[in-house]
Length: 124
View 1 (cartoon, rainbow, N blue to C red):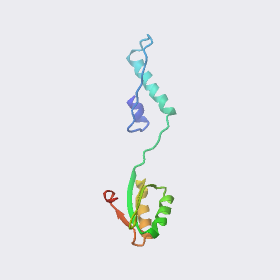
View 2 (cartoon, rainbow, N blue to C red; view 1 turned 90 degrees about the horizontal axis):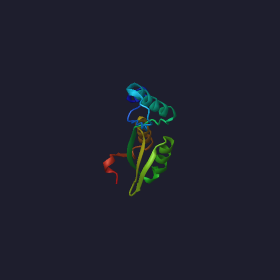
View 3 (cartoon, rainbow, N blue to C red; view 1 turned 90 degrees about the vertical axis):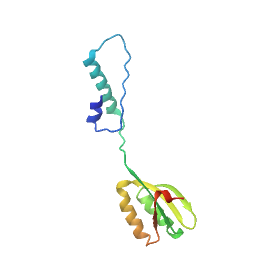
View 4 (cartoon, one colour; view 1 turned 60 degrees about the vertical axis):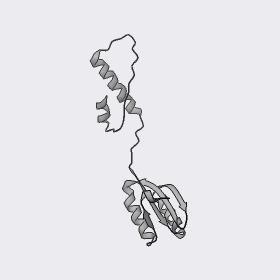
């Protein structure tokens, strides 16, 4: 059963097969084939969802730049997690890690020195 999962290039997946005994003894070889086939058949119809590593970022901007940052986040399809309004606007968001550097560069450039990147621990 494990080899079937390995051939599918799956990680972090567990397979479990339950066989109710019906009076027929399959023997070791037939039992292994039956279990392996059950896992293979389940994988044919299973929806495979790729895991995408996410990066969480936080920044603070003056109120005048909040709209710009929100538009950039929407264009990048980042998930806005939290917004805090105080003396400045603080935004925390998540996006695929492969896109984080490009978005940070775009926001830093368009923020004209007024955007401040925060550590995840400093978000209030």
